[in-house]
Each structure stands twice: as structure tokens, then as C-alpha cells.
Length: 311
Image 1 (cartoon, helix red, strand yellow):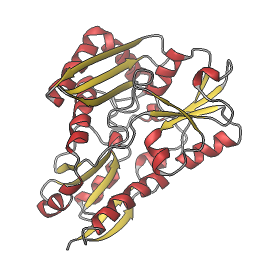
Image 2 (image 1 turned 30 degrees about the vertical axis):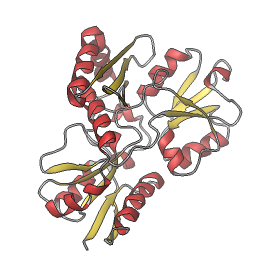
Image 3 (image 1 turned 90 degrees about the vertical axis):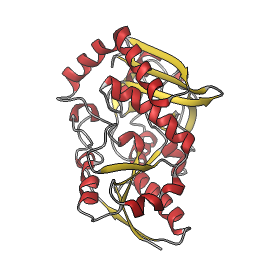
Image 4 (image 1 turned 135 degrees about the vertical axis):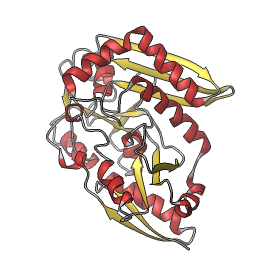
């Protein structure tokens, strides 16, 4: 059997994800090790993500390790992976997705609507911030960086009245005690690829590609391909106020997508159904642009980042 080296970020969640994939590979008889690689996004912790403006900020250094044959495969949160991979790399497998929704966590309050006026709510993304503003305009929404443990510690210490995290990460780490509510996509549309993992390899490494094929979940791959096609058409990334979520239907996929101004004053939603994932994603992205999304995104790119980031 193969000896495989996995490249991963060093956060608790990233290592959970890498160890999860390693266990599945070991179950097939492979010898697996994990190499921790520090990425640009891990090094810049005192600046809001939307202001960094670096493409592949959580993946670039891991791809360098792949290119240099220091690792054989990378395990990413799919929403961190650019919609267009650099030449020489392949999205070899997309395992079955965990819950894609965003979760509301609080010590004292059971729901967003229960928060008092001017309550302090922490979140790391413009996407969440924008949609939260549209739901509750009278809250103080504060940037929140750090790993899941750090964010939960800040919540427990009283620094925040509530925080918003991806449900998948909280579930994977077994830290659901403070989850009070899950937002449906009609309330807060998730980031493209949220809740899914990405197994990236070198495009010419046929042996590793074949080895990880069993991890691929066709329904998840179709859904995230649809979401990422929307994101790509909009020219944005996971650090801008774009949400996209696709779920299977009898006719194929139902895609919901949103573009919103950071202050929530302008929010454009689109929902369509189709059988071709990428075509559906492009159509929804184009529909959003034709309804005014380009104006919102031009403003965000101009103020928040030097270049449009990819997720």
C-alpha cells in the first residue's frame, strides 16, 4: 500500500480534518503522516480577513509543498480553496459534506432575535456581517479572528454576547454546547463550499489521485461545483459578502445565492433550479450581476481589499 504525506494547516480544526482523512486512508491499509504547514492566513491574525486581499491565503504554502513533493495530498476546508486552481493541481476528491449552515452561539441568548439592542456579536466574515445587518440592524457586529477555541473563549469570557461560526467546524470538534440556533440558507446563505472538505493533489500524480477516489461523494461534488461556479462568475471569494448554497432536488439542484453590501442596506438574492451544476451556478451569478451585484462588489473590492480574494 502507498505511503502518503498529508499537508495541513495547524489549527485544531484543520488537524481534525487531516486526521479524519488520514484515518479513512489508513483503513484502506495506507501508511499516512501529516505535515503541518503555516499559511499566510495563519500568520496574519490581527487584520480582518476582508482587508488582507491575498489570493489563496490559506492554501498557497500548502500548494508549494505539494509542488515540491514534500507532501502528496492536501486537506483543505473547501471554502478556502480558490475557485480556479493553479496549473498543476487537481481537486481530486470532495468527501461527503457536513452541515453547511452557520450557527448562532451564545451563553445567555437563545436566538438572534433575543439579543438586546447594541449587543456585541462577533463574526469573521463580511458575508455573515452583511446578512446579519439585514436581519438585525441594531447590533454591534465586531470582527472576530482566531481558531474555534479562541473564539469560544472570547464568548465565555463575556467579550461577546454571541458569535457566529460555521456549524460544520463546531460539530467536527465536538463543541456544540453553546450552539443555540442554526441559520437556514434563506436567513444567512452559507459561503460556497462551506461544510465540505477538499482533497487536492498534483494533477500528474495518477497513483495518489486513484488512491483518494473512494473519498469522493458525487452529490457533494455537484453541489459545491454549482456554488463555486456562482462565486467564480461573481469574481469573489469567501471573504466578500457572497453566499451560495446548492441542495439536491428531483430535478437536479436548487441553488440559493446572495450578494449584500457590508452594512446590509442592499441585499440581492437569487434562487434557481437546474440539472447542470456549473451551468446553473453561472446563470445564477449572471442573474445577480444583472440585478446590481456588480455595483455592490465593486464598492467592496475598492474599500476592503486591493484585489478580489478567492476563498
